[in-house]
Length: 185
Image (cartoon, rainbow, N blue to C red; front, side, top):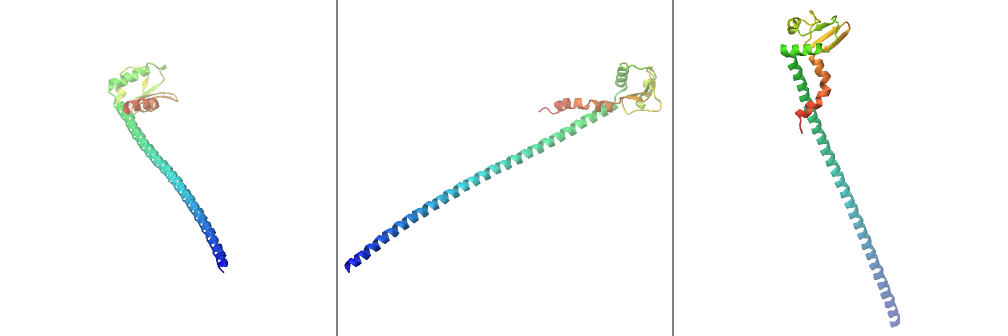
């Protein structure tokens, strides 16, 4: 029986070696699969972190950009308020123009016009008597008046030289210059 035992033992030994080899290869395969999955997980983690980092940077940039736009808009609004005050002050100052400056303004403009004598001059109430005393070739209205500057009526045509109207007319042209002088940046 010793041959049979030897043969059996040899078969068992061979089977054990085969089993150990299969188990070894299986463990090696398992380790390769686990390492591969760990590598894939790390690559996925890296991609997710990089994407999150890019998205966070984009969100940060967007927030900064929106904040800068808001600041710019607020500055523009503040500048517009200041420019509006400048024009308002200009109108107020022109309304309180002294008599000599008003007369110079009135004469300077009337001299450049071709008037036929049928026109009516409308001036502020406080200037009516002074203008009448100038002996201009244009009639001064008794019942109409303007707040500032003057109007010339000829039938249905009105030439508007009121200071408010003139300032409004020149506003677009002057706004840029005023902004440059006020807000040198």
